[in-house]
Image (cartoon, one colour):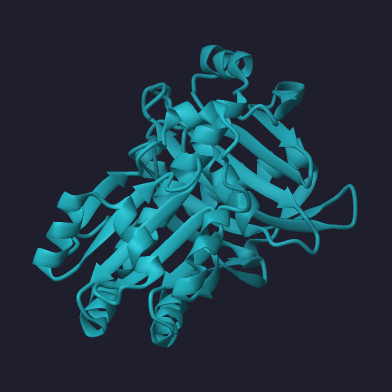
Length: 345
């Protein structure tokens, strides 16, 4: 997980009139958390915007198919209001152009923040719920195009982190608004020893079948699963480095809970952070032994020194012909709440 780097200027702004009171209202942004509207306040800036997006929009490969983490659309200044229909928006503003996009950005930012941007030669501002709830806007503004391009280059990773972190926060916020499986959450905390926020759409499909230390949560439309299994370890932190052991834990989970096989040739290992705990992430592919089909999975291996365990939190989807990023983004947000110490956020 990247650490957010220092920026030229970052101002946290909450749009006037937006906030948690709207959770009960009707103005909820539609679409996917991967949808991104990019607005420039000068049509001549579109090539610069597209060049930036080429580096900003990292790809994730699901087995063999790469997908962009976002689906961006670029709009000129006269179509800035199209951004109101997107979950995510990015405004690239050359201050002083006087476009309708610049005027809208100016309305959403406080006088103090705008003055600081002017005085500092540019900056990055985030606005939560700018036009409706579950929406997020980042404004990158500078006094001339050259410095705007430089600002974007310097803050590429930061802007990526801002969108991804806020996506996670909004997904969890929406899950809490729609309702969590509180009884299941309490059961797992009491009987197994972990906490995780379980969205209302998920139901328990299996719990310790035939005494196996694992459980499976499922939802449909398309079929998605969040499974958790565990193994005893005298030194969980040390054993995170034993990828062979972790792979066997995931293989056993697949056999016992899913009646599937996993494909070692597809494995990609990386570091992860789950609720401030150093963890290991495994990406790979699975094939069902019950039907003709398979798909991608992500597994997070999390040490629990208190109980002497390693947990495997696994997310997978069966969605033939469909893009997977949106499904995995939402499930990964749920997995990010996993903790052996109780609620952390």
